[in-house]
Amino acid sequence: MAHRDPPGIIAPHVPADAYRRAEATGAPVVIVVHTTGPAGLPWRRILIPLAVAAAAALGGWGLVVALCALLDAAAHTATVIAGAAGPLGIGGITLRLTRTKHL
Image (spheres, helix red, strand yellow):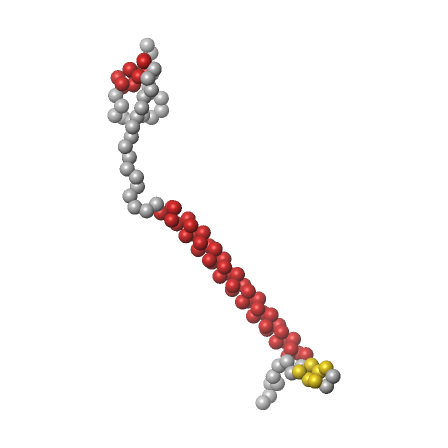
């Protein structure tokens, strides 16, 4: 029988004679590794939803700021147009759109 190394990386506590015996008889080699779970909170599971929520909130505030800037520009434009047009009159009714500059 030719000597062969175990396939892959196996735990160092598995005796070689137990592996050879299992290989000769055809029995499977079962390796049980006892591990403990990570202590504390899984941060990745918590931080990803928080990052998505923060990005959505920041995007919402960006939309609010853009809308405010757009309305501000529209108000300034309307003020400039009304100031340049002067009073509007239709059929004897005059509407002043802006106040006069002198008191």
